[in-house]
Length: 183
Image (cartoon, rainbow, N blue to C red; front, side, top):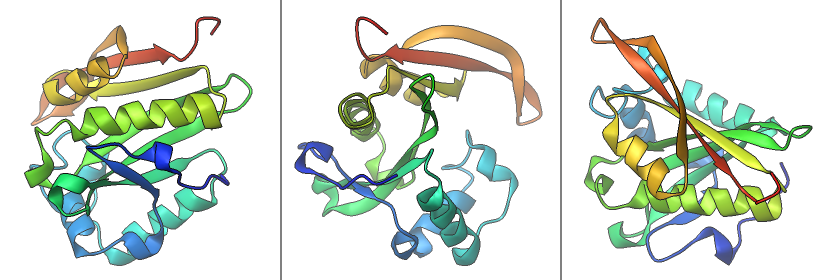
């Protein structure tokens, strides 16, 4: 992926930046190991440290089918508060999945996820020429579903009992966003 961050990657709520291994610090690793933060993430099943997290970010940087961006919040002194990932990108079908993490609890409930999703939708459409994006979330993760819906995603399906959350079956909500009328 050979994109450069531009002014279009920011608005009054967020600023996206190309995530590099050097951006990984203790705060980022702590998000991944915090049960409140990782409750709805598959990464909760592993213990993370600086080395493994930097390795993951480096692998994303090297993968031409992944765009991994950090999220900074102007309202929080431009601190790195989360990440958003576009990938895998399917260049043949011009589609991609989105994953997002707002790791900093003080950033929750501020509309940052929606703003980041809207920015990455614009990047996918204008810079990558994609025609459709997909995302999924645990059914009880209402905040994630609201952020995606507010950014133009629609619920396309539901996979019953796809996950176990606290040893209880949990549905997967599948969402999609067509990026242009002729998609």
